[in-house]
Image (tube, rainbow, N blue to C red; front, side):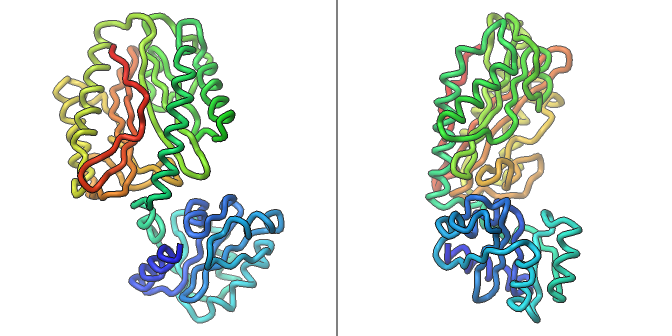
Length: 351
């Protein structure tokens, strides 16, 4: 934790600021260890790291926070008043992509200092996961794999999409986790919806069913997609499935440190274009996963982000054809010193 704080201070120095007001929950948790970061704020100065939260968390905050982080229990306005003398005369960075306009105005009124919107100060540190963070993501994915294996027999003709989603969510809950995001279960023609959250639609014989879900366990997330067949899908759906599977596996096998994310996207995109499905691949190849389900790096067309050891990313090409259906296959992958490690172990079915 002290290394993280010192790296934050160094980044602030490069920006010409001396302090950082941390308001995004993921950043609060990353820098403090507080397990209810949505109700916390942090102030980082050259000599202090202070977590502010309210009286509901008097005991919890002091149990959670890491060494070197001071805890101040105060209502929001009192927290700003407490922080004011700590930042007097400083240039203070704020998280420009998270802080609301009203919260910014309250800071200006309380502190009377120069405030500078900043982006990426904490997020750039979070790109590279420490060993304990990797283990956190790994544990979340292992749990998701177990839940998917238990629910897979329920994905059959006559079941509703929403019933499958409920079973997945219940399995996560019973195992001590929560759903990382709204579970996607899209069958038949609804498979053409990349974000087709579960509906009342009844799964039919011949459908492909796309299931995209993840676990949030102790703050860290997983993310995985499998497309499964119910009965015998059409030859065209089989063709699309196998094209996406080819693209997904080729992209995973191409992962290596030093590679541009845009070049990795091109590996999968070129294969799908070769199958006449270029326009059907309507989104980027993937994204980073950690304390937030969707974080850096960006694995998109033309992305200049560079893969580095310790990054956890998704590889999730898809193809979506209106009126017919769709396919997405997604693995969670750790970039290693010499290549990659696939963290998701649910089987990819042969269609």
